[in-house]
Each structure stands twice: as C-alpha cells, then as structure tokens.
Length: 287
Image 1 (tube, rainbow, N blue to C red):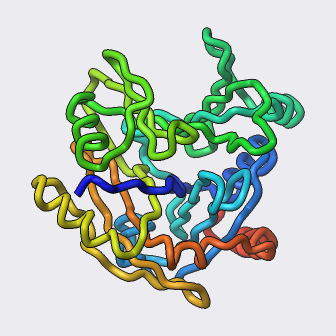
Image 2 (cartoon, rainbow, N blue to C red):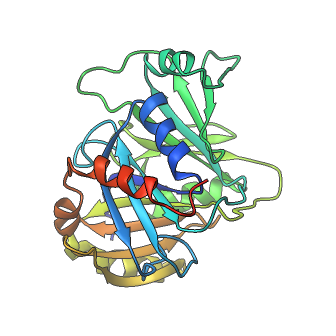
C-alpha cells in the first residue's frame, strides 16, 4: 500500500512542573488551552508513558486541532521531572510576538547566529522562534525536529514506508511532510550516542479508520516495529478513538489515530482552561 497520507495532529511532551509549563505556553508562546482531561488510570497505549498512576492531558496551540498542529502536555501526578535525552531537537515557531512576551515577562532567551531565538521550556525542551509574523491563515508551528543517527534509514522509513514527501534534503538533515511543507518533521543527523532517556514523546497523525489495519499490515510486511497493535482508547465523557503506535529506526514513536473518532474527541472545549487551573491549584504534588 502506498496511499498513506496522514494529517499531523500533535506532539506529546511529558512535563513535570505543570504550573510553570502552562505559564510558558500561555504567557510566553501565546498559545491557548484547547482541552484538558484528567485520568485516574494509566493509558492502554502508554500515552502517559510507563507509569501506573493518575495523570492529565492538556492540549495547547494557536488554533483548533482540526486546522493546526498542537502540543499535548502529559502530566503524571507525583513525577516532578524527567531526564532529557538527545532524541528531540525542538519546535520551530513563526511569531512576531514571542520576543515581546519574553522581554515583557523577563523570560530568558538566546539569539542564535542565524537570527532565530532559542527559548527553553521549563522542562528543557527547545523552541526556535522565527521572529516574523505568520499570515492570518497560517499555523505558526512550522515543524518539529527529530534527531537521528542514520539519516538514510530515517528517510527510507518515513518516506519509503510511511509515504511522507521530502521537502528538502542535504547531507545532514531532511524535512518531510504530509501536507506540502505547511507542517513537517526535520530529521537531523547527530554523531553522539542516541539517548531517548525519560522525557521522550510521540507524534500523532490522523488517518481514516479503514486505513489503520493497512498501516499495521504495511509495517509488518516491512519488518518494522509496532509498539501497540490496534487498540481502542476511552476518554471519560468523550469520544473513543482507535490507535496503532509504531516505532521508527531510532525509536521515535508514531501514533496513527482514526480521524472519525478523533474529530469528535479533539473539539475545542472553552471550559478547559478554568478546569486546568482548578486542578493546578489543588495539586498536592505541584512544585
């Protein structure tokens, strides 16, 4: 099968300091809370990682997930921090207001040689800011960066098997996309030992429900790794979704979720911000 064409949905960050993290995304990056969900039991697809405890999920972004790529912030109660690896390179955002907000709030940043700004989230994740205004109909989140040890193997997997289009490529990096570069993943070759450590996340793509078994069969046919076979995940009071979780040659996790269920689950919930703040205030584990 060569017809995979996923819709990029979100990337997952595992966070320890939920209050400081939410200040960063809202006050510095200028994102809004799209929805918030609390769970008393661990996820069947390890959405909250290898933890068996109460956890929460908060989606933030510059617009609804139906039209924008967003960030999923996963918080495990009682876990204050995670060791960072070198698997995740960062998020690139096009925005004219982040610098203003960083200066106003005295948030530290670095100006790189190429003019980009580098800000680090409270848990250490990199955000590269292109200090220019995004168009009114443009998603400010342009691409995420995945570090890899073997660039050719990554291209073979993401382009050759998952059918992503190569937007640009050189000896040390490649940008691939399902939507002609409006959002993509940049794979950057690193020479040091690859380490996913504890803070690793995953990217999610939406595909038709009927396509998910074909994706599973394609991965098996190519002798690649399926971390979680097709499974249905429930969210209390909301729509259920079916997912299959894959692993690329470097261990980067990829979730293919059914569009039909996810379009209902991901609907913007205007009450979520107040709900999130309520849980932050009464969290006995909050730093």
